Length: 172
Image (tube, rainbow, N blue to C red; front, side, top):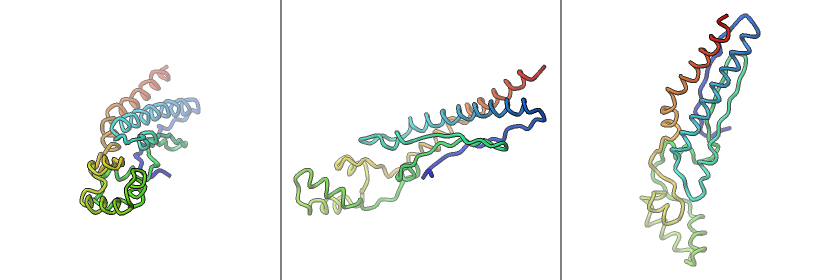
């Protein structure tokens, strides 16, 4: 289950003929896959990239279809995706990574506590993140919301083209 997702839902038109029903479902499915790909691309473009790009690399998309509806979803399974999207209140960063960092750089364990105390109001801020190589922003990025908003007009176009193509094929 995704920890953060945005969904697009459509209901295919109903037809009496099986051939028409299948063709409309196929066209709607294609429009949905195009929509999911577009939103995913726009979300990835807006996603902040840390030292390994884990969040950006784990943004995925999928389409699920049934006879009554088709649903596209763009999601991220990473536990911190929601905090990057929506932001988070200042907080103490966990001591374990600080201890590991201090040990790796030859400092006493107490140095980790000093860093945590000194930077408490800025914990997980850009300043502390750069110092410790964490880079987790507190300010909301809204990469999913903005990526979806940017895609709306083109998504409508994908479905409009699907309907136009169907009408052209079955006009006879």
